[in-house]
Image (cartoon, rainbow, N blue to C red):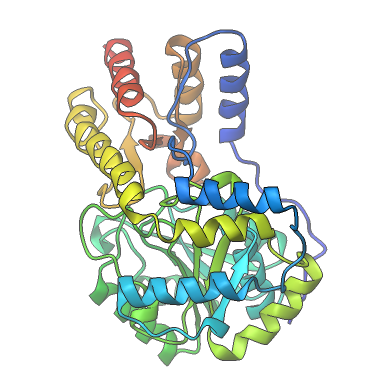
Length: 385
């Protein structure tokens, strides 16, 4: 294991052009509203901020164990008991420098260069780019209304036949970015059982857990001890810049993951671990924030079709609307640039998430304030007329 391809090229993020222009326009005094970034507008929980201030005042911030502090791992074990009714051994939990480090550690520990790994299309572009940079074969499986916008055993079988490969792993996000899909318990179990029967590693991206508005929010850990679960404090906990996440691992993978983590990251940042431990007790505050996303979601479900932008997939979770722009354009990148230039509203072109059909779609984040989202839609309504 741990083989890395010499090929270092990764596919560019087309959204970076839009984001860079949005930043430039805002600096020049334009009233830019960004619906492009999946970042909560709310601050980290007060308990997390207070814990970090106390730690800074004490001044003893340093390295921790490579897989994180015992205190945070035990707190996460209690989290799984409280939220999912699960008894998770804290020794199976690895604290990571954001979920991004979790993906790197999982891919490096599970796969060799040339192995085939399936992801959903549309899906989070970093999956594709990281897998490709590590020399892995990325199998993008279309998720549509026919598959309930998620991966299924049948679609995975078809993808293997079409590509002439045997899958070594699958990566599924629920709730998903950009589609907002929540994969229900039965569908998730079907995938877990399929992976077990075919010796396929099952990686479950659960970073939007806590932000489900419809359907069943199920952790893969409720269905199998063999899943590799990746989660983060960035989204529900509003701690994007703290760069702190975690993994729950099968026992056999703990030591391999630890060895790679020691070499790549030394340890996750201690200050962020202290804040994250406190954040786990802030559900009452965080659910107020979630209610504001729910209000934005309800508003967009009503207004987007009214202005000619029907949603292209269910907005069941996360905080994204994935919309069809074909009434106005078949070039989502050009559409995004023009919308920013003419009405100062930024959104992400669908090509980031779907290189084959994303020219027809856009992703709009509703993690901002209710007033900002309402203003952005009113600008768009007038512009699209």
